[in-house]
Image 1: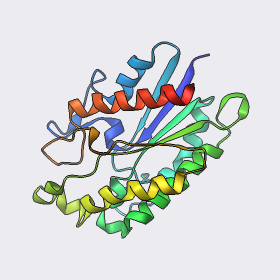
Image 2: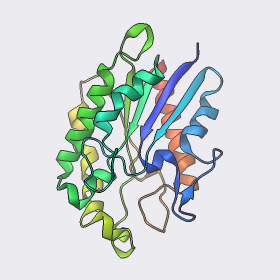
Image 3: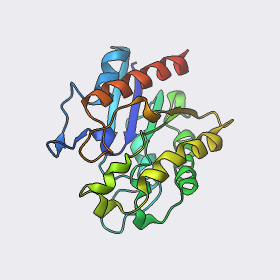
Length: 213
């Protein structure tokens, strides 16, 4: 049986292309590139949804709360070797009223729920890797996306990874901060560009290899 990996995230996992307002093709999206790197022994499953939050119900759009969806999602894809969670960008939206620490708390809570799901091999829990997305560029405030996002999203996106790292320490949940190692587009300053997808795939691949050892 192949080792199954679920990549669970938001528009940056779905593959949103800010230039076309569409979706990057399979030869660009990072989960697809991860599949190529991992090879035939693995099956990588894309579970990206634009606008997805870690634990919040969005009052404007239905079905974006990851906490209420992740259990049936993982069970439907079981048996799993690994769940890769990359969220946080949408949690910075002003309408949710969260601090950077609150955002980290929400993602940690979600990661623990994934770890407790009986969706791993032999009915056990899958391994969980939490990836923090690259921070939102301050220039987003000069674009149209500022209106739905609100104020200070860039600041919160830079701050929550260090809180999340601390919250996950000693929990058995792996952590990867993509930080400034992954490039963002110069259109809305919060979505990966083509090069960023490859960079992220390479980072996650290296982490998956170390987890699997």
